[in-house]
Amino acid sequence: MATIEIAKMTKTLRTERSDTKKELKKLDKVIAVLRDLSTNSMSAPRGKKRRMSASARRKIAAAQRKRWAKFHQQRT
Image (cartoon, rainbow, N blue to C red):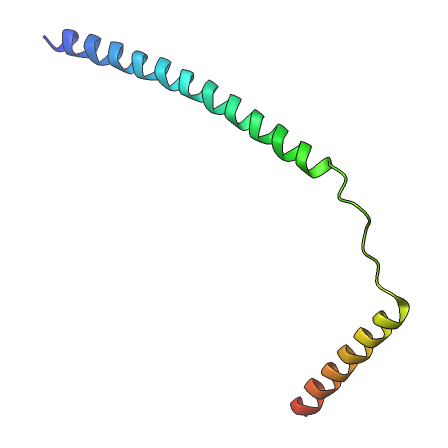
């Protein structure tokens, strides 16, 4: 009787393994499609790159220096 139960369990497990392999193949296909979609959308040209003027960079740098000075002044 125990061998019959083991045989049934083995058959059930093999069936489950087969079903799981099929599901994994489906998931691999979906992942491949999503990967293709993401690489295609990322490689598309995005238009002209925005560039910051030298004066704007100077203003931002000066503001950051001011923030750092304030921060270090408060620490001491």
